[in-house]
Picture 1 (tube, helix red, strand yellow):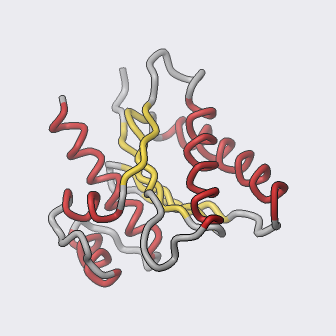
Picture 2: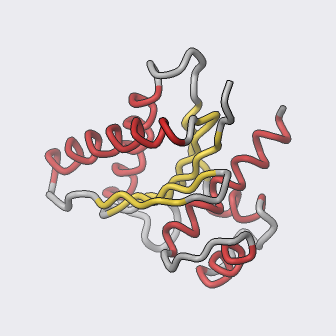
Length: 158
């Protein structure tokens, strides 16, 4: 079997950032419609993009950031749930093995990569730069950190 990757996903109501355990990142912009239509369109877009990404980054496991903190609200909770469901539905029939799609709170992924659980955005970006990230997206830096944390957690469990 080809190499498998751990995915990390940073969720917002306007975009998703994907990070992969090999250091690659990408962002998906979402429609900002309101209500059920927005959620349905987000599910479709996330599912389609996840299926595309699975061709280049066959997933072993996916970690979706659990909303927390001062920006935590119902819309973000909804988007995190839609993200988890859309990724799962995109991957469930693609592989002969189940792909776990889990949530992870920020303090856990931060401490797993060796920075304080309450680390600032600047500290996360500094960490991302230390592992070779050259972009300028905070969302992608977070997604990369989530993927690296997920890789460490799954390796420790194996």
